[in-house]
Image (cartoon, rainbow, N blue to C red; front, side):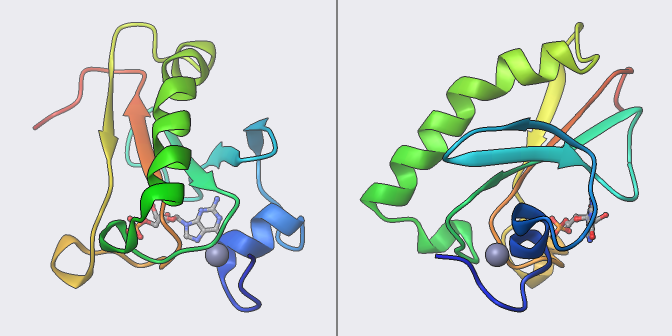
Length: 112
Ligand code: 5GP
Ligand code: ZN
């Protein structure tokens, strides 16, 4: 299910331009608009849900699927010496887009 007003759903639908580096029937990966590292990608499930805390069995399967794809996608996009995955959950983590996404950060030595 896509959400009308969600910026990532709009990216998935192609209504907002983005630089997609990977797409299949379950997920899309595109470059973050304001990269916080040399490589900064966002991996997003095509099915809209807001928060990690809204995970159910079906969504957990998609998340596991995404985690299985990410090592290859990261390596293909310049993260050849490691990378960091981040999921921001809610306000205290600074989540700004409420469509679950995994940040993929790398391409350089990352500060803690
Ligand atoms: P959050 O803080 O919610 O975990 O991360 C949201 C991320 O989405 C931020 O890093 C922000 O730069 C990125 N972002 C927000 N709007 C857009 C957009 O329209 N296009 C792209 N490519 N990235 C976006
Ligand atoms: Zn969405």
